[in-house]
Length: 190
Image (tube, rainbow, N blue to C red):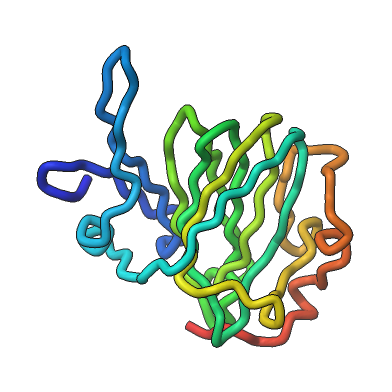
């Protein structure tokens, strides 16, 4: 936990640069309040990026798979992802050449119920699959979106061996034709 009057759990995952955060909820039978982001508190937990954009996504169906995406420099992005309705299985893949965890991934279930957030630093590809219908995902980014700097890796790349646990994911045309990790030019270093 970090912060003084407020508490937030911050747990590094098996790739320590990716962190699972659980904001504290204060509430009663009428409802709750929760501070989901505070720059000072995040800095205590080692997250010092400045977020410049918020995105809100809605997915009507279970089994929609998005990613694995990243933004190339100079528009590279760190992300802070949370779910306000429904649930996703959220995945971050290390694509930093020279990193001891290059090509490895970590994942967490994020839901409105568990109220957890995933911090994904620059140098990671990001993707998720919806676990429930009517899922809403909100995320902050540390840089503005630039279509010209969009990059990605194929969700089903066998070298990653990510168990998405969905037999027939619903994919966009873009998601189904991304390159394999081995075909990716070195973009990020450590």
